[in-house]
Amino acid sequence: MTELRDQILTAAQNMSADGLSPGKSGNVSARTSEGFIITPTGLVYDQLEPSDLVLVLNDGSIPEGQLKPSSEAPFHLSLYRSRPDINAIVHCHSNKATALACAGHSIPAFHYMVAVAGGKDIPLAPYATFGTEALASSLVATLTDRNACLMAHHGQIALGKTPSIALDLAMEIENLAAQYIDVLQLGNPTVLSGEEMDRVLEKFSAYGQQG
Ligand SMILES: [Zn+2]
Image (cartoon, rainbow, N blue to C red):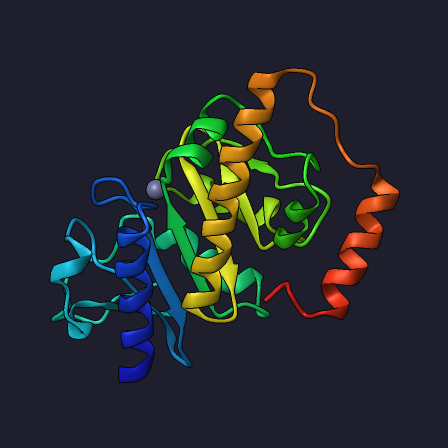
């Protein structure tokens, strides 16, 4: 358990150091046998101790004597319930992904690397107020067959087997978002065919690059 807390904290601090988390935005969590452990609300990651991270139980209850969890804990809970294959979640308001999401864009197959999210595009989850069950439902529906998506008027989210794998995916989503914005500015973006993306996805699964 201590080791898992260290992994979450390292990912949260790296997320901040990598510039993916403007202000105090974003949160990181990982699954445990009893529920999940998540970063607390409103604190700077550099000053956190492993013991500051908050345990949320599988029924959504929070044992007393802990800090307040991230306000976005409800969607973490729903995603752990709906995706038994993943064990960690990174959510952030990284600049380029958030800009695309606020302009109403998903990321199509303009580059073959969009396959890192597990499909032929990186979808955009419909908007709902932060911290609500409506937002949790939006993300659960969008992430049935993807490990990452943009969140309309909000940011992005990435899932993985470990906090560091989820963070790597969030970083890749941010890179792709930055590149796609450049492509949109050049005009007339073109996308790879569905057939080509099938080939890419096949190669990704063969080489185990989907985390
Ligand atoms: Zn957020």
